Figure 1 (tube, rainbow, N blue to C red):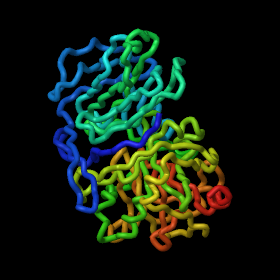
Figure 2: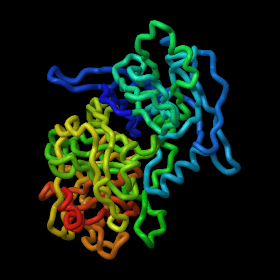
Figure 3: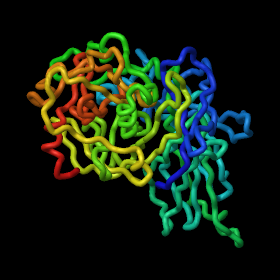
Length: 457
């Protein structure tokens, strides 16, 4: 199911005024940054809350988009007695400590063989991304699928198995940035027309993960996990929010900006978010155990590098590089870590890596935290030059899931920041793995992590 594709991004920062506007996607190369596409956040678009177990599908609409796309499936809102399914699913994600950034829409679209269409467009106005799920991928050897955005600047190819396979599957495609994904079946030569008689073949999209628009994301709870014994009512933005886009520090704090490149956005289960980062020079990534804890989950998790705004306070982004997670090498609930690898490691080596500080942190150590709060492109709390005196070690022996396991601090974090590295300004090494909100916020001590993981790094 996995092939390298060309990736573009749409900056979904929630600091923008208003709910509509065009967002340009940028890629940087030797000739400088240049736009490679546009995403429009449609104003006044109603939510389409559909959960996997409670979804229903509206009839196909006859209207195509401006580019002449095929008819689009649109899911109806589903209401409960007290709240919509979108609110229920967001709350469920928050209870797991993962930020909700999208929803599942049931579709049921079969194509590819026996006079079925070979191309289908899935469009959800205002969506920040579209991600297709397949429960059937019965193709003849030599055939393949592509999942692309409308102009083809982001495209992923999935080849048929070498042998015909007709059993049900459970496969996610890589997400396509923006509100439209185009699925196309490419078939090999068939001079005798035999393929048209193979009615038991076909590709079925049973559901789609639709990323929330900026307007929708503002309404999603941003709770984080809190340390045992805390009420959960505390704010995790401690006072006024002092985080800024990572690019804001390219000149004033180039070390923090460079370190932020090693931090990645995780898209889990198609609709949920955590943060992760490269640890050491090898193919190793670190996040929280409560984000995921097994290789099956890692395998279906997208890892986005370079999802950063191109200008300070703007909402254009550089082209992110998306790779799949691969194998979980170590995980632990009490110390809330998961160490894993990624596929296509060569594509992300250029973003650098971070290292653990093996010394136990001391009270007052100044900190900074590169992260993906609420699904935003990379932001940094506590960077050099800011009035962020609260972003420092408050208690170097704070109790998390285990006695004295954590470091506490008042650096600003939000939902989606789980798994972020907490770095010392003095050493520029990681002193904690962020996992709890609540002011104080806290992360697992890096010296303890090193003692447990050094054999696997």
